[in-house]
Image (cartoon, rainbow, N blue to C red; front, side):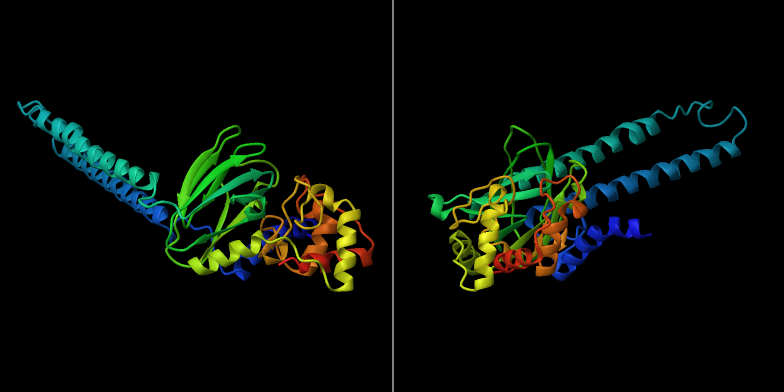
Length: 338
């Protein structure tokens, strides 16, 4: 049981983090986006048509069976000159042809409607899949206006946002069920899609393609803000990290720069430039850490630093057994990065 508990702990933490963040769960029937609504409508249409076809065929088969039981002699309809050709034409050609034609037109119309927004996108966001986290980039007019974050995508509500999807390693799949269907991310290729949230809120997403041992812990959140809040968030995220005023946090910056963290992570304004792991410039403003594996609390942050391989075995984040004082200082510093 203890081993089972350790295996289930990260999953339970992920579900708990989603609940704490007020996040829409991964439910393909719950949608709040323009493309998601159309795709769900197409799905329900196909389900209804499929069920109707199954029911009709079942009724016809049963009717034929009952009729054959009543007509055991050779003077039944077929052998009495009633060939049954009209039944074959209507039941096997005309009606199925009409059903397939209507289904084809509805499907093509839906695919055309979700292929591109009817208005110019309010923003273009580059999303890069890594094993096992999401890099999110808002390219500005220069380095000082470029926002880099991880595992959370902020969008303005009621406006389409274009997504450019690439991967740094293996095949991933971008999937936020409430807003849009899956779009695969292929190595060496840039795929595009778009999302538009109808209401403000937090929408859960995940990688929809098995991509390795920690595939289940490669989650994301799309946060739909009001246009004003979105612009404010963008401006805040573009700013470099403020210098710590508190002595403990200042010591945490020293730990970050000298203990190896700066080799893999970047905190803009500190001289660090690591690109292996997520940009941590505003990590404290995020709701989760480790790509949704844990809620973003100071206790979880310290646990993640010292035991990352126990939470996400195989990830690039090593477990770092720092001295207690250094660990607390580092966590205190990271907590100031808002």
